[in-house]
Image (cartoon, rainbow, N blue to C red):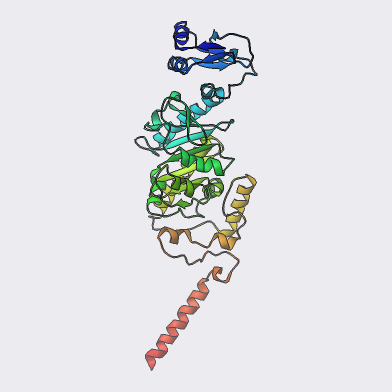
Length: 355
């Protein structure tokens, strides 16, 4: 086996080549890998034996059947799949920063690769200024395998979702102001007010507070993730999962826009309406056909309206008066009945006054 050491790597960099192809007959030392990585040289593993290490300028020069060596994490980190994911994460990082969903170095994003490893954001970096070389390759236990920047300290909270939801391809955590406001007052956003959130997000549960990145946080997020794509984290922020990096971000955006709208509507002195209970069933049927999870699938209309959204916003016990069918307490009171009751009370008062 030919040893490709640091000196050989330094000589290789001087040639100006951008790709190093090698095979199982070549062993690249850690020092050599560092030199190549710092120079921006890509490593391409050729599964065929017998050919010496060669230089090149096109990644596509590698055979179509080429596969990374089992422990060659640098090759995985620089693979076309990982490169695409890194670009998507950087893009979403700029978007959550531009929308003021994060400040300072807050928030984190991750995505699952097809081989079961993960790409995630680093710690201590503004998400608005990420570059692909800052991202990290980690395994399911949180061990960093590639990348020179240290991974986010909250990655294991993402694993609470990845481990409990096989369909989850990406996780996005941020601190959008309006949704986080609900989290710090200990209130779940009310339901039955806007169709879009009912279909694309559904109920947004509130997880109890736990130290960010801790096992306790893992334990409170894991049981909620299979039926909820957006979760409020007590006194912390929001965590969402999706079938792609952008889909996870979409759940975040929809959640915060809803919380903002509801908070504003709650301040307006006007007639407060909500989606009829029977119509809620139709929205959930649409969601079921789309294959989206929701803890309310299968509930009857009367069960969907057990809580009045506006009473919930005001922190008052719900009367359960929703106008839906299915129970005695759900029957609406008509104007005629109210007027009749007022008339009876008036007559009784007049009788008492005449005595």
